[in-house]
Image 1 (cartoon, rainbow over the protein chains, first blue to last red):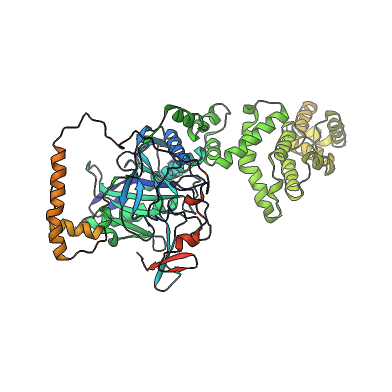
Image 2: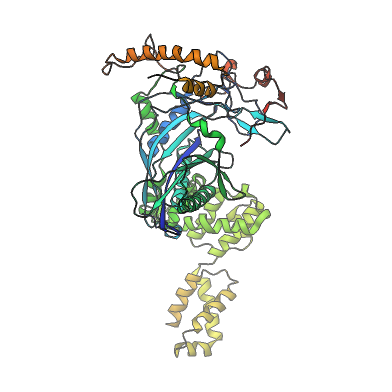
Length: 499
Length: 100
């Protein structure tokens, strides 16, 4: 249970949150037509006669969109409905030429499922929590309106009209802005693992409708909820909840009542406001779409969907901790984004082969390199870094040399800097630039003997109990070796000689 | 189930059909007659009958995910799409300003 509480004048309040996330399905063509879905094209160039709702056009569903919705359902451990159907949701708006949206009200393709949000004490999530998911259904997106291009007209671009969306409806299981934020982030991560949505919130590929109600701590009845539409970032989802909670508590304590209504979020003012014009809009007069037969999914299709699922975030995180021996923190950070774990896994694989060691033995070193060392070098170089040179091969070669004791950690960084600037071969850089540490005991021993011989007084003091002088000997040796001696070997030999 | 003049006026407005008072008056009994007939059909117990979605056995056809596979149902035809628009500017449909 979250400990998020709102202090009102009459006591403490808690919040109940449900989210409807609209996720654009990754597909080449639209849900019911062959028009392109690529973002950012010239207006109305990706509109078919079906999307423009010309008379006599018939929708034919895109198999890939059905498949992606099913795979997404499987990834949230949901019930997959072998029978589903499309319904018409009727309303008039300039971005919807059909006069109705084809959606799934009565028989959605995916039923109840769930996802896990992880404990994050700093954010106010004291323990892992399961958030229930009510359903996922497939529907058409609407077009886009532009209001600022002409003094008296709005411009309509139908490129997005008819693109497939999944509407993912959570149960009202979240009780703090932090939980809602974690839910959206986790859902986005799962969608991107599955490949059913690119999760690009800036381009509107994921948008959330945020349902919020408040009640006195201890009450069991739900309060009246409001729905804030089209919130397009995790940060805004959290901000909407905070501002809406405050508004509702103030309203009720001022003897007002919360009206069940649709609201809009204004990020500039950080507040929500009522969309009164949509009062009638809830009368959608749904009915089964007579243009479309029901969807019946075959067992073989479902099996193919299941077999195509990748390792999912929770499983991957557990494997990183249990099999690769990574810390919880490293495992959590590495498994959020698809790009991050892909980079890490490739690098781990190649480095393990270079060294001929099992992955579990070097995983932590590779993880630290991948999460902090390498990004640190890139950052410090700024524009000087050419990221094309940041290949897994080059990084694995550096990690291989470091793992074999040929170069030190700081030499690894220096070599990587040169790689990023020039694209030269790491092994060649190590040789040419003298960026190698000497592990040859003979050479180190000779240097140490010299130093001990010319500092007899200090050797006496050390043997007399002045332990701190050990550092002096190490320093002198490193200096004599021009900083290229392997510090571990130096330590070892010095300890042996000084007894 | 039955409707009154108020319901009919609301349905007409939701469907963006402009109807005069006379027309509304005339429509109420007509619609009620249809609803009455449907009520009569509802008297038959069909709880054990599978819903029939088509007269002949028919399966939903799905499309492969290809762009413009059939030019008739593909994009890239802006001129056709905009041809009947009362106002089209810079490749957009122009409509009376709608703003929240």
